[in-house]
Image 1 (cartoon, rainbow, N blue to C red):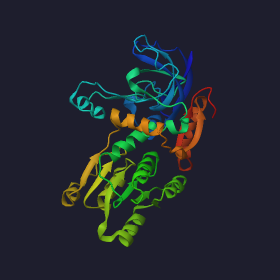
Image 2 (image 1 turned 30 degrees about the vertical axis):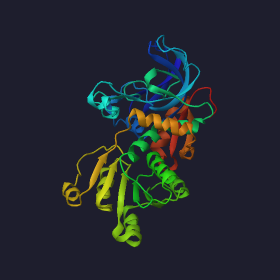
Image 3 (image 1 turned 90 degrees about the vertical axis):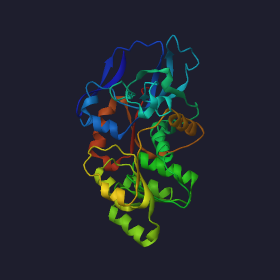
Image 4 (image 1 turned 90 degrees about the horizontal axis):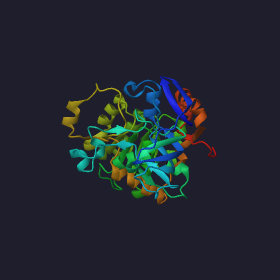
Length: 343
């Protein structure tokens, strides 16, 4: 028997003792070391992703150690720490054949219908795992999945030290985008919108200008940038209202990248997009190469563990989600730590 969290219905998650799944011939058994909670998990907990919800074991941002291997997998991964790419694509369609697995029409995501990492153990296809170094701290490695999203966003736009950039949404993805930009282009002018004080200091520590409201950003632009304007906006909230503000902030010919997952689709301002010659791109997760790049970066030392604010054991997973619901202003990244590991 193993422990596995089950989302029974909205706002009702519990840890149950369940029978271990039979290990497939192309699968590896992974003992979970850590699993991050993201906005998508919280939406499902709140009942806002009903199509994926029934009897679900969530978790797509997880790492662990391979404890068993299927008969066709060999033993080279046995005992190794791994990150798990949660995107399962068909591997045969036009998008997959061209390295854009995240565009696959048959795309499935571990943790959204298929059992994920909020458990003691999980069985996953060997093609979904990539080794991580033993010396890499779990606090670094558990951020590989959101780091892959940030990498995809940056690979879809041209950046240099002269660019003026706005990040709308000061959460994990927004912070990782900023940190990657500052690591490569330290003189880039980064302006961040976040209403949460718990994030403000982190952004300020990497030399970002941080504001709580759109009006404050507009005032900064008018006083300091004037005709130069904003070259790039990363919209990371998924709020259509905030995305509509991006259209007002950007200079003519600028680029807006929609990174956050929207819940509504009513406010598209086609006239302003056409008149201002704006470039708008949607950013959908990442492809296999970008996930592998995130693993490589973490193996080579990239570190953003400062985003983690709270750590819970698997047995306290309900507390973790209720804290995100009731005290979200006080938290940043919340992580579920695997059984038998130090909290």
